Each structure stands twice: as C-alpha cells, then as structure tokens.
Length: 378
Image (cartoon, rainbow, N blue to C red; front, side, top):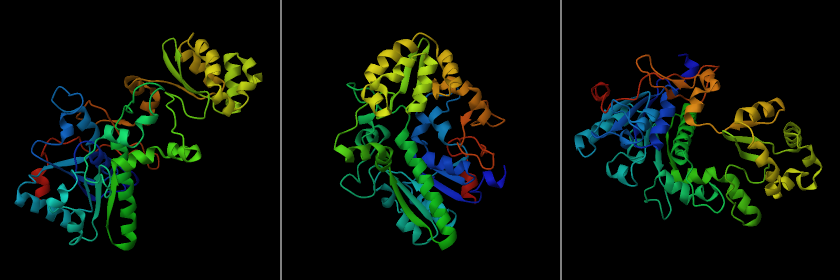
C-alpha cells in the first residue's frame, strides 16, 4: 500500500471500547494505517456475540467493525494489569479511545486527565452516551435510545404509524465517525503545537447533529416536522414508488427535472396544471400528483422505469436489498468489498480513496487475545 493510502502509519491507537461506536472509530483509524490495540476482557467485546454467526463461531457484527486491529486481553479488575495498560498508554500510545459506562474509566485511573499528566502529547477521546455534562451525563445509552431521545425516530417512518428506528446503527457509527474526525484534527494540531488534548463526544450529540435540518425547520414556525416515509419534506416528487417487482426512488424536485419526468412518463398534461407549477405547489398537492404517478409506475418493472428515466436524465434508483447491492457491478467496480487471501469473507472497506487507491485490509478481525503476548512484549 502506498504512503498516501496509509496516512496514519506509525500512529498507535488504544481502543478501550466495546459494541459499535468506539470500535467503529478504531476501524476507521486502522484502515487509515494506524496500529490499533483493542483492549478486551477475557470474554471479549460484546459485539462478538451479536448478529449472525459464521460457521466457525465468528460474529458478523464483530467481523464488520474490527479489521486491522490487535486484540489484547486485560483484566481491568487486576491492579497489575491496569498498571500495565496505564504505562502502555503513557509510553506508547498516540491516541486513546474509550466508551466505558460513565465514571468507570476514572475509577480505573485510566481517564484522560490522569494519563495526560505524564504524557501531554496524548490525544484522548471520551465517547459517551449523553455527553460530558448535564443532568443525563451519567446515564447509559444505546443506539435506539439515542434515535428516540435525539428526535430521529420522530421523523422516521410513515405518518400515523408507530416510531421506526433507522435500520442501521446510524448513531453508534456516526459517533465513531465524529470521534475519528476529532482525533484527526487533534493529530494535525499536535504537529503544530506538540500537545495532545482531551476530546468529548457522545451518541446524543451525534443524534442531534443528524437532525440539523429538521431543527432549523422548527425555528421557522415552531412546528415539528412530519414523517414522510421514503420522501423528503418540501420536495416533490422525491420518494419511492412501487413497481411491479419492487420499489424505485424517483427524484425530480425541480422544474426542469419534473418536465423531463412528465415527458418520459407521457403525462405532459401535468405540466400545465397550476397545482404542479412549482416545487412548493407540487409538494402541497403531492397526494393529487401521486394519484397520477402511483398507478402508472405500478404497471411496469423497476428496470423498465429505471432505463426510461435515466435516458431522460431523471435521477432514480431501485430500492435494493443488501444482496442486490453486493452483486451490483458498481459495487464491484469500486473495490469497496475486501478480503484477505486467506479468507473468502468479504467485508466493507473504507469509503475513501487516496490518489485513486483505497486503503486495504491488512489483517483480519482478531481472535480474543490473539496479540496479547506480542503487544505486551513491545
């Protein structure tokens, strides 16, 4: 791999984390070239028991989030083990990421303030649940709780239907991404100042960040945004339409695209209808517009409409299953699915390329404690 595709080569990251958020931050940094030391108990990361299980007992969740890491078992209840980890963080680490329950890391003497006393160059990221301060600072949290508390569930799903969680761990993984962004910024600043810093992020703050547009809408008129299913507030047509063999998302939210859509579907009479004269009017009269579009689109396949609309320059995409996405020639062309020569399991790689080269998987997700002896011998 070229240096450009491994910009964090030489950086040592200690991941004192479990589940999704902190491991996803470590996953990003590991793909960027950092040496990530994953600290686990003898039972291992909780994620080792989540998701579907491969025949050899490996967890799909753990495999997806822990490539390019070294697993070291540390019994944090043992003072000698804690002292080893503390000294390793002080003497070897550039970055520490932790997402233990609130207050626990300080009880163990492994908090950022304690470690920076002896290593002021250390960059330390606290990835919490509700944030570093406030009345809920000591409360625990998981992704669905934060999708609920942060407002995401209130705008997800269809009107007059129960709350729906976004189908992926968007808050957990988003928090890991924000952690990686903060760490990269701190590493850059350290090259100028020579000093590290303590960073704080949380699942709750991430959930708030994801509803930035909706929060701004509330400032306009005080009204909470409604749930619009596959659509988008204030844009039409801009949603999934049912075809004879599945769903197709059609995006024609401006006048030029709407004209192309009408010509492609042979419904030019809609162009002279005052109810659909602009995007705002089309959104206000979306039910009437869909009375025309829904039965028309339902008559043919996704592929039929996709080819027709793409030829007309109208953006569209089928609602794909995961297996359909994995078999898509575009996915293959990008090379984002990666595996090692010793494995047939393909895992998603980093969604970034450097000078046209995507960072590659250097090592498989580790077994519990696979690198304990190696790392403790450093």
